[in-house]
Amino acid sequence: MEPVYSSVISFAMGVFKAQGLRFTWTGTQHIPRTGGAVVAMNHISYMDFAYAGYPAKDAGRLVRFMAKKEVFDHAISGPLMRGMKHIPVDRAAGAGAYREAVAALRGGELVGVFPEATISRSFELKEFKSGAARMAQEAGVPIVPMVLWGSQRVWTKDHPRRLGRTKVPIALRIGEPIPVPVDADIDQITAELHRAMEAMLHEVQAGYEPMTGDDAVYLPARLGGAAPTPERAKELDQQELAERRRRKAG
Image (cartoon, rainbow, N blue to C red; front, side, top):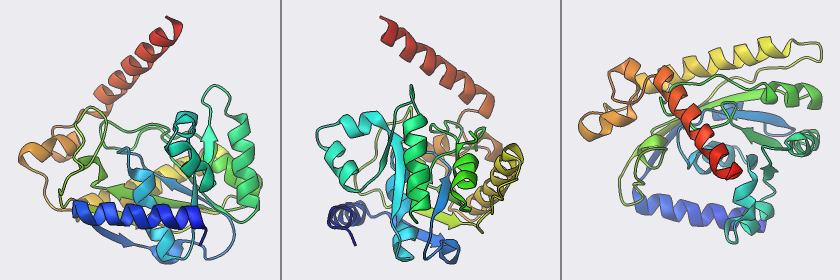
């Protein structure tokens, strides 16, 4: 175990224990014990990257996450992210991060990516970017699908943080690796990944404790919850992007 990564894991586990978070995961056998793989995850909270490392640790592996460059620029999180060998992504110039990720995969690393790119306000799967499939194909490694559920109740977009002792259950499921042959159609692989993760997510949601009362805001509209529909969530994403561009231009 690497010293920086192991220290961060120990600290995080202490924090999660203090919060009373209750983790369950299935499918650890699908995480390769050796060699590279792209670990593709859904994105419903700001803490997903921290929680998604749990099953990998159980398999004796570490995940190098791709994260926005701003996290690496922070005085506190930056040195930790670099020490754990995560990969900074500059959204204005992503080619460098892509090359670094492919090199890590070829070097036998697990690289964690969020194909949706940003947090889903509807808590349903958004459209996927093709980067996960392209990296896997170029590096000659499989994609391992993973879904999380419950993390949105801790800290997500448009809702206050709940970092106290919430005792929130967080469920994770890892699916069978998806091979990406050198001659595979990237769009078809991306669609296959989306279908697999959507089926896994629905299964995890079906087995999760009911979310009622104030927690209904964390439940998809499809399941009778008060979260925005995917269509409304897309509108909110577009408004957020427009506002970000306006601030940058000003």
